[in-house]
Length: 298
Image 1 (tube, one colour):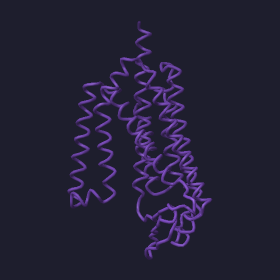
Image 2: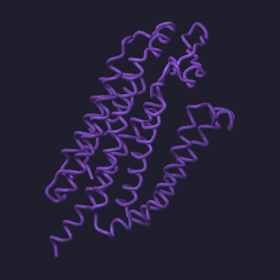
Image 3: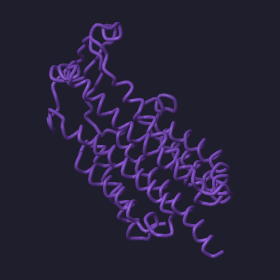
Image 4: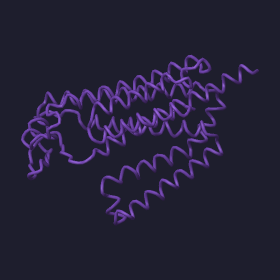
């Protein structure tokens, strides 16, 4: 695993990327995410000679595809026609009803989703090339870790939506429930680590995070597909745009909203992507390195 200095660099860069995503800064997000993925790709734990060449290429290829997905997405942020100035309601309606813009947005999100799916495939093949005994250990750990991770992610996704506050009540009760869920998750994963060792459990956790991120991005791409103007779906779709001065209704195929606060959803997606990549790549490299060392000793 990374030593103190690379670990601090990874944490600092990941924090920069998440904060940049929260506040819509393409440069902060791009620099932070690029540093994280670059450090992982060249770190001796991944690129060292002890890691089998095929595994090393697959892991680094997956990281390159993740970086490419981030670059395409951030390019869309930087290419916004409004820059840092919030658009008016009329400008926003004109933008989302533009068929050229709709097609460009769909192609961009489709490219991002394709890169993420290919990256997950590369990492999945790298994991699949591990010896059978290590694959069985990963499978045993995944039965617990994957389910717990998915349930926890679902709970975290509900927190910013307001549904949790509506079910639980005050902010204090939501915070206590969040601490209990996260504490229970840490305790259960800790037991899985003690039972199945750290690397198999970490691989299961990382792949679950990456798969969840790829699914979210793919769903966004599917929902952003252009709808023909003469179709029933277009005529029945109503968009409500909150421009700060009231609500406006119009028949358009895309529904958007102007957010005045941090973009929590994007920040969570960036955090899941970077954390999942780091856990999966480092743990998979560790398992393959242990196999190489064992064969050299024999």
